[in-house]
Amino acid sequence: MSNEAKEIIDYIFQRRSIRKYLDKDVEEDKLVLLLKAAMAAPTAANRQPWEFIVVTNREKLSELRSTLREGQYNAPAAIVVCGNMHLAFSNKDKEIWVQDCSAAIENMLIAATGIGLGSVWIGLYPQLNKCKPVCKILNIPEQVIPMSVVYIGYPDEYKEPRTQYNEKRIYWQEYEPARKHKSRPKNMKYL
Image (cartoon, rainbow, N blue to C red; front, side, top):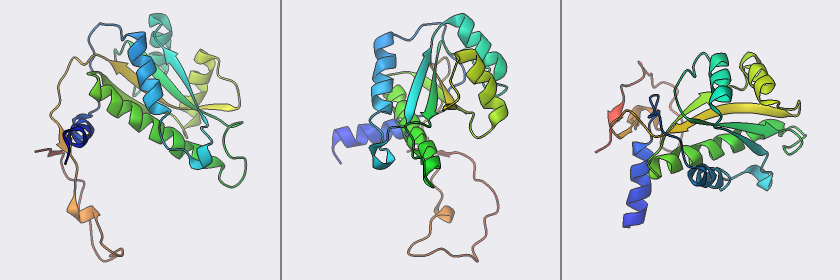
């Protein structure tokens, strides 16, 4: 494996949900880099149904946090990842925008790790009771759905790299319905 490939794999295992941040602004060029990484994600039929709202204003961040029961973190930046239904498929495949936006988010999370930032993904959609207040705060139009909030900042905590590889969740050639799963395993360390 090349050094570049190993570095990418290492960033994947180092990517952890960071919930404590330093009181230090994230530079605009780093936020733009994360957005470029997000938009490099694969998307069905190259529809690119995503739109992003970058929030760095402290008052707006505070207002956003107040609506997110699971998102009370002190990050100095948030990127709200949205799906624009005018850009998404309008037929039976209309919900594929969720997969497209999820791929964009994962790229952003890994890129953040690679440039020394921490991040955490806060889901909104399909829980409309979470989406509506965010729409109001950020003036999001009806055809745009906020899927998730990604908090970004310089981490004020360290978490060990890990993999959650679990052989019991892997089937080769076909599914084995008789196999039983007892419980979710504890986080596994990356060696």
